Image 1 (tube, one colour):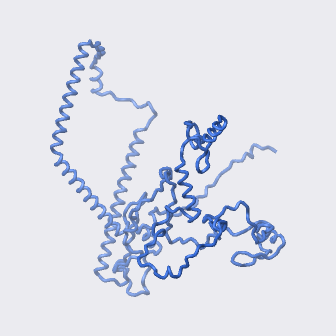
Image 2 (cartoon, one colour):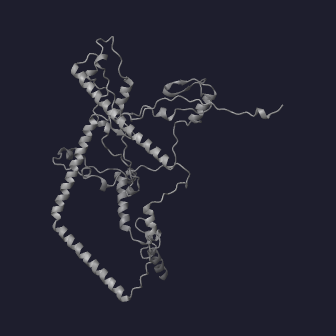
Image 3 (tube, one colour):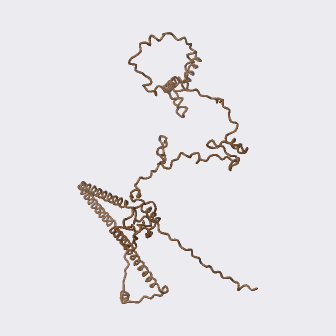
Length: 446
């Protein structure tokens, strides 16, 4: 009797869960992952998972994930002929057939590789190409062409298509490349490298409205109208006068610099320390005056009473400063509305000034960059090609060539912001210096 009771107790202690997993719910140990799985009662969760697995085997998916429209159909009309056509007979299918008919919608797992009917290649494609090169046999190349074995690179080395040839035809240089955003795993957004986007701003050359080839002035014609010719002459005269004044101003500055350099060199004449000071009356009077200096006495150490008094005075000064600051702040609070209006008015005024500056800059850029300094150099304004009255020709046969097409195109590119301004570099002649060598032939006696 006792043996049967003990065996039943051990059986009840070792009883597993309904699914078959080991379980020991009376044990309170939670030291490891296995102890958690074994000692925690999760039979309701396991039963729910098993029900979901059964639904997946029968229907191919979990019923909870199937939409309601696919599970239910509302029949509002019905069909009266169904009862007459359907024969109510019991199926004569056996139990074994029923069991075999219950096939799972999930495909089976194949543990063995299936043998394909296609015969496997004995050698690889690369090895076959190499053997064909060695045997000098014609082989198929790119674009269904045959490669001549006698051409360069037809040896045993592997020479296939390059990466550029493989990707040819798939790149359009005129279209903007749109990068698709990569998928970022959830929770790692802050670990990804931030993509820095270039700022979008208006370029200066996009605002320029100067045409590439400017329409010439009427005064440049070989037989110009009088008014147009006089106007162009005045314009050329103003430009030349401005250039002459600038040259004279630079000449004056250069002359002053040279004069200052000459004066500085004149003062430095003589050896260092040889210049003697000439005594004057002022220096003699200063020497006669005797100056008596007394050493400042060291301050005595303060007593405790003096230190307390100094601390009290300092505290009173701080309290007075604090009261003045509070009074100032309270007066400022009362004027908060007025100050807010003043700040708003100042901000609007500054925004209006900035807007006016931008409009003036845009209007100036519409006329081009001529005369403006970009970097180290200035953009050339271009010369005015005009002839004097006595130089004008009455026919095209006697017309003289004026200007330079290459120079005009180059200056036009600079004025429209297509090229950067640069200084004119003139060619220099190579200087040939004669190097003299002194031979000591007079030292050698024969």
